[in-house]
Image 1 (cartoon, rainbow, N blue to C red):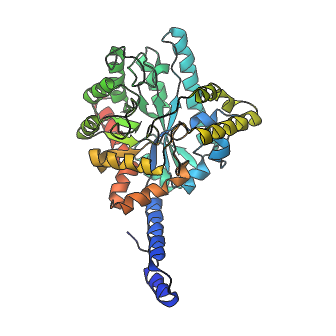
Image 2: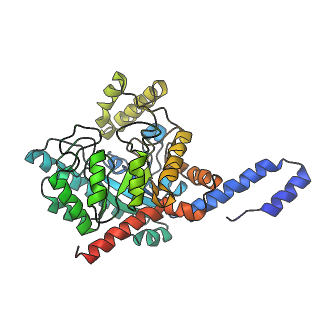
Amino acid sequence: MRRIGLGLGLATVMATGFAAAPLAAQAEESDAAAVHERLLTLDTHLDTPLHLMRPGWDIAERHDYVTDNSQVDIPRMIEGGLDGGFFVIWTAQGELTAEGYANAAATAAIRQQMILAMIAANSDTAERALTADDAARIAATGRRVIYQAIENSYPLGEDIGTLQRFYDNGVRMVGPVHTGTNQFSDSSTDDERWGGLSPLGRELIAEMNRLGIIPDASHASDAAFDQMVELSATPIILSHTGPNALNEHPRNISDERIRRLAETGGVIAVNSIYLAPRSNSPEWQALSSRFMELFSESRETQEAFVRNLRALEAVTPREDADFEMFMASLMHLIEVAGVDHVAFGADWDGGGGVEGMRDVTALPQITARLLAAGHDEEDLAKMWSGNVLRLLRAAEAHAASHGG
């Protein structure tokens, strides 16, 4: 790593008598910042498109998590050295009926169009990415790299051919299921119906492989995860998942399965949620039921909801986790899977963030801690983007060789 001002720093210590330790710490901090700036950094799961639904909310403007509850915007991405990531088209789970599928399809289409409109409105600072090679090319221009992902394939209904349209508009990562079991898969947080993937879910994995899409097993049941690893012609990802060994929760995964994922070339992106037991108090249930106030036409209503959220957090945190717990989770994944199979998917704007790391401006401190732990820039380059881009290249190559 490049050392900054070492000779000058030593002369200053000798001349002034200041302690060397603070200067050494400053040099290390400066080195870490320089490394972070050089890295190509991607997050594999950004729920920020939710905020695009808020009247008056503009991703080009800088927002404040404390008063706004958002964690990602272009100014903060620049400050935090986040080059881009996978912006998520999320749809809530509904009834498995023709009407439910139709409503979900319309919602998902609108959300994808909002992402595309956001890119068009900010063409000087953001660009849609379609291939693995696009990431470095776009980042070199100073623009943010905007990939797209689907969280919950429920909007596809029972016709997997509809995935083609989402792919044509930019989707390159897809998760079959969210918090509720659906027509494709059992969910890790719902009742078992299929024993993993449904027959239609198995077809969906094949369609992802045909198109050149990374299959995402976050939120899928353990059995569905096992089947996705076995069925997919290319390595899969867990785009925002943590280790069960540190906090037992259905959304986390066992070390045995993490090792299996790594053995098959897959990647697990460390989450910043489910690091500790979560409160489901009546107060939290009541506030959650008012979530749509965040999308009110009235800015005052939006702001009041966030104030109520902050007030409840001050009394009873939804999840009492901090940056040290996040780093422990990350270091555990590195130990179990290895640096070739770890990435970052903090679930920003989808419930992620911990004390000491509330928005993307805090990302450089992750790089600093990894460097201090002995990881070099090559390791960091893999985890910050190289591993997920490897998966995308594998998906692209398979599709090209099989007529996708």
